Length: 311
Image 1 (tube, rainbow, N blue to C red):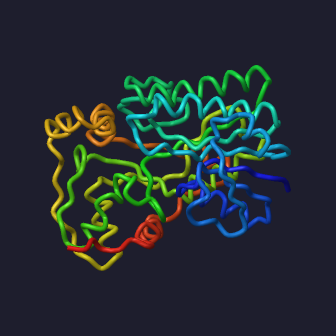
Image 2: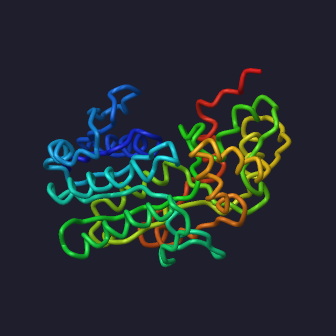
């Protein structure tokens, strides 16, 4: 038992808070604003996690500090993440809390094999290099004995509460109303989808296991499905027929990127959706005793709270 401090109240932060609260832990959720729904059994505190002094005060006595932050605008990551990452790492070092980070696969960069924890971080674009640098700095501090860290990586999110920030869920309201889906990349390329609940389960599992610290884990993830297959499965679970699906022309995405920084970064990372993007999560499954939520249940959870778009 002990205090657990979660930075970020997105779907991963909320699920992590819920799992810990269900265990009877003392859970504090830190966000920049006190607005938004509070996870039952947790306390919410408004703070800027980049302020290491304030975060240290909040996390005093905590056994674990969870980085579940997810800056929504790709085009601002170079301004937001460095300070936020330093604030979290500094607070963990000062308090002795284990820093448990929820991350993406971006640090690996384009690869031609299923992604495992043994792959080097070889990102070629800006946001991937940012995530790789964050982990490199944390691991260096860990190896120097200054702090305890562990990172959990996951593929594109599915599950409850992902909403418009997910590649799979972005078009779901429109598709539920029978409208065609426009997607980035190749809708028929194999792709891994990780339920946010399984990300949270992995964060909680590694937080207080010394044998799990100092390394990266890939959250349990089901067998890959193409974007087309995954959307068809979601619609079938809702009792709806599959809709037409089209890829957004690359030239259109690049043109939009000239005036929108988020779309510009999305275009540079389009390889994620344009080629096979598959993970092998067997290490976490075998060594941590975890398994991915069954795909049929992932589909039901992803539909939870999603309403068809109004015409």
